[in-house]
Amino acid sequence: MTLTQKPPIIEPAPAPSGVWAAAFDALDSAVNGLLGLHTTAAANGELGECLVRLQATKARMCAVETTMMSAFDRRQEWRVDGSRSPAAWLARRSKTPHQALQGLVRLARRLRRMPRTHAALTMGVIDQSRAEALSRLADSPRTPVQEAFQEHEADLVDYACDLDEHELARALGYWRDAADPDGGEDQARKDHDNRRVHLSKSLGGQWFLNGRFDPIRGAELAEALRRIEEELFKQDWDSAKAIHGTEVGIEHLERTPPQRRADALVEMARRAMATPADSRKPRPLISVLCGYESFRGPIREMFNGTVLSAGQIAGLLTEADIERVVYSGAARDISDLGRRARFFTAAQRRVIELRDRQCFHPSCDTSAEQAEIDHVKPAGQGGETNLDNGRPACGKHNNDRNRQQPPPQPDG
Image (spheres, rainbow, N blue to C red):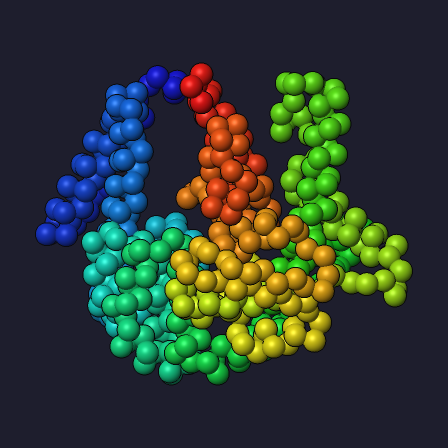
């Protein structure tokens, strides 16, 4: 089939007669109508808007699916042929992965006790992933969390409707800890106790690595690996540029991203072996935000947004550097940035990092520590280099923004 040909129309599979069958016949007809449309007929901006609508429709279809699955589960129809579970029954007939269907069954069962969440899913204002995040609280093994969820479900659904995925994860983390402080500490201890790494050698001489880390140590490892991988990327890019000049592209690089990560891990080991045993090791930095809670609420999280328990933070105090940040007035004003005992980035950059946390572009979650500091109003157009005119910008969005800036006019 060439790109100019329309996709084939898929005929609906035979279905038993009845109200539900008629509804699915109409659904098949509607899908066939969409498959019959050609994207070249879409006006500018129409495809994007339709994709947004499609996400809401998929959420509503999830509400339909979980409603059906809940009834199917309760009726025990899947037991007729000896299947062990509704997921097993459906996986065999639909060729859908069994694990995915187990998650669907679990969500369907939980939604029976979550009327507001199910209503939001039905309206398409939250999607399946957000409903699952809420359902994990509703079905928490901790009784205080379950009881608090029943009382605060409406508020939590509002969070799920209004916040992006990273903000929602932080909000739910803080809510869970407030509902059950002891549970957060217990989970932190379990996460730490469950840390592990397996490095095994095969008969053919290949090595296989897998592991698990708690949020703090995992973040340390990821950051060290990222920095070395970035160094290797620059080396690969410079080598490719020397050969291909200005026409260099990702396809010209010597290593793939997974290969660079593997080499970065080996390089990390080499550097560790070359470092004197008595050398000073990097230390965690704890930022104490004074006044921040007045407009944001209590904050106990890593720079990447992972919510920590009070016990996890307390465990770092003996090995961490401390910096003081004093907020005053408006939410974005910092009246004082105290110094820490060891070197850190320039105070002005640090203030912007702490204030904004990530790249200014709404679709980008690049950490401010990995971003550049960009002028909101370009310096070439009279923008000042101060806190109000600074913001984090990842390399891509900084470059995109600068390319889109109109040239300065003769009148300035």
